[in-house]
Every structure is written in structure tokens, then in C-alpha cells.
Image (cartoon, rainbow, N blue to C red; front, side):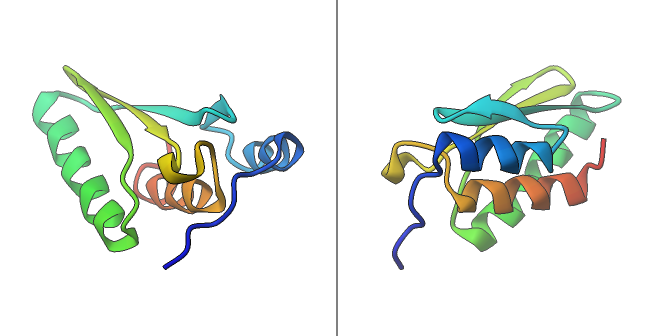
Length: 97
């Protein structure tokens, strides 16, 4: 299946205005999710993993104690695409902030 094209800077700015928990640039969009404790953060990562696997699009994740630091980028496009925005919305559905 072909991947969507990289977003232009204007498209990315417009998209991020609808994703207030996310920030970033053409190199990737980022969000941190803080949970009550380490087991909760691991469980959250597993929930995100199932969504990512369904989409065949996987985030870069850094787990630090009870906080997940997420970065979304479509590596094959060398930038942010609509696929990253879709995954960001799905993550926001799981963890509204």
C-alpha cells in the first residue's frame, strides 16, 4: 500500500492547530503522556502498540518511569504525513489528556 505524501509546512501548521496536545515540525510531531506510575505507563504503551499495529504505522517511544514520550514521523516519506495525524488522533482518543 502506498504511503501518503509528506505534509507541507502550512498543512502541518493547520493540522497541529487541531491537535493541541501535539507539537513539532516536519521532522516529527511529539507528545508526552504522563501516567500515575510505571506499570500504568507500560500498559499505556501496550494500548498504543495495538492501535499502531492495526494501522501498520509505529511511533518512536521513549518510556521514562511513568511518562511516555511519543514521536510520530513517516520515515519512508522523511517527514510528517496524514498517517501520523491519524495515529495522533487515535492516541488522543486513548489518552485525552
